[in-house]
Image (cartoon, rainbow, N blue to C red):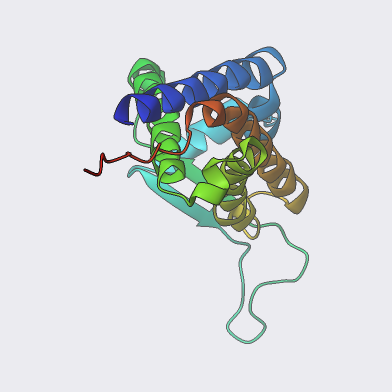
Length: 188
């Protein structure tokens, strides 16, 4: 069963990689959400470089007053700094590839431990993977909505993306996990 789990996970991971390449690489999905251009980028960059020295996530609020708090309708900005530059892209890509394969292998193992009712039905196995995508969507993508994070529309689009790619990964991975055949013992 271990070979089936690994092969199933690798199949799901391959689907995730191909979909990510097509959706993000060819169509620019994540770039359209995460890499919008800033007017006066050089000025903003130099200001951030001079003021943000430690890696982390920062919030930039409008100036408030002790009596009135923060002014209504004024924007709040978040800035993330991972502590690395473009030279780290190759290392980050390797970590990303490991995650793209490790996550579906774990999902395949979880599926293999499910009840026979689930693993005896291909649609239920795919739904199992879609459920994992739903968990990523709710606890990852939708929880990133709010002050200093994604706008609600972008959070919903990212959530739909997670469910979609995990469902398609399930289409590839689910066909390989089947119920264990019961051993027949000879009775003398």
